[in-house]
Length: 292
Image (cartoon, rainbow, N blue to C red):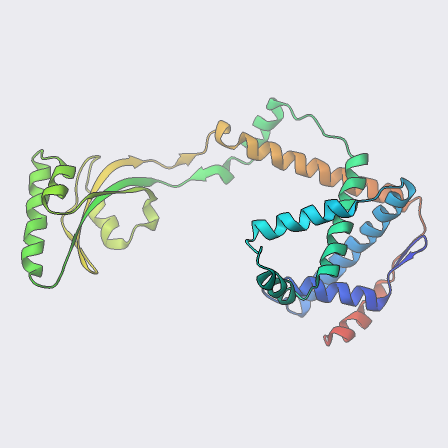
């Protein structure tokens, strides 16, 4: 491929493809590989176009900026130890020079685009319209808010343990305090929180079905002991509110606008530059990879 005097050879492209594939946890099959390769080809053409624009505008990235970005990467991934850092790079099929080059290119491309793309004002009305369109994405399942008392079974008197648990259930159903009963039994009240009903194991789900809020289950025998569960509250299925997701929607719309403007910028620059793309050479790339 070529953009003005910038040229990427078949071997250059093949090496970049190998690097990208090395970052993937699962390797694509032949059909997926073809689609990924074509996507990478288009991505690299866009990169060349934007790099040409960066040269026109005399844009650069200082070494200190790259150093800071890489240092931040190490901290975020807890790779301050040099040996662990070297192993991480090797497992990704990279060395520090390759990583620095990748960061430099990525930061420079970002700077080019940020200099050309302008933020778009998104009104609350537009955000609410988007919320209504995508409302099914924000559906939340029915949940049960639970707490439990767990009595451990040491194997010495399993039948007696179940009998003690039944006594606790009976007293709580007659008005005794669940937390106090747990303390008297040598246990503690544990908050399980709000759990989707369908995530409950079948026997627990069945035991909860007849209960009203505040009710307790019969003793449930589980590995290692006996469980008594209190249904604190049923939470019906519904939707996250607009207020809960407005930030997410705003970010999504902003990212879409950024991506659309970036594509528009690349297409405009393509019409101004000499751009040559030889997709017919992709078969040579596949052969170099040992594929079809």
